[in-house]
Length: 227
Image (tube, rainbow, N blue to C red; front, side, top):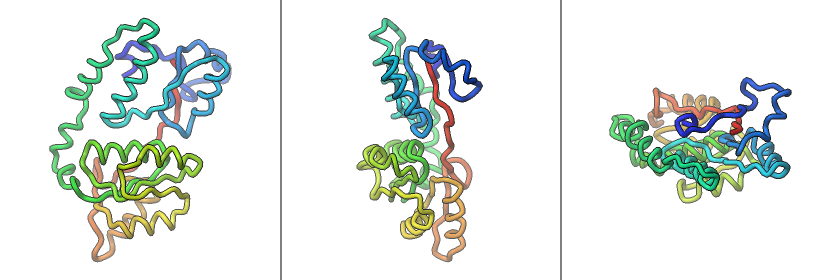
């Protein structure tokens, strides 16, 4: 995506980078922190010490990709960059993204209007909640994260998109919340997968199906990027 927008990557940290390369960080125009749990403090430090702006948007789902590209445009256009960012978003939405196809698929139609729960790190749980509620028409019974230090940010991100918000690292509480909600789908971590398996064995449990295959788990981005 960045290459298509004509943006050269200065460094990807920590992927394929060494300590000796850190001195090159200030050569970039800006930083991207798609994963709040890794890199946000570094980006804030670079902004303070070297006046390097940063973008902290997880480009997951159509709406967040558009917001991500818009944030890049806001930084680069004042620098004289003439790339057609709006046209790029339109092309990605209509021709590259498979969301339109998936919205017509049996898997999605089976979930439309039904209840789901979301739990994971703050970045991915918030992003998944937005995708489910805004783009797929799925009712999110509750969304939660184990990142208690980011609870306020998480609540703000998912406000109005779910019935309840859960901020905890207590897996027993998470399991009880899932059992109470009786969702048609669980979008979570490996721990929630095990909870779902136990619920499936109950006579009145719902069937759990996710976006790809039987289970949908939130992945992890373990790097920040420097441009």
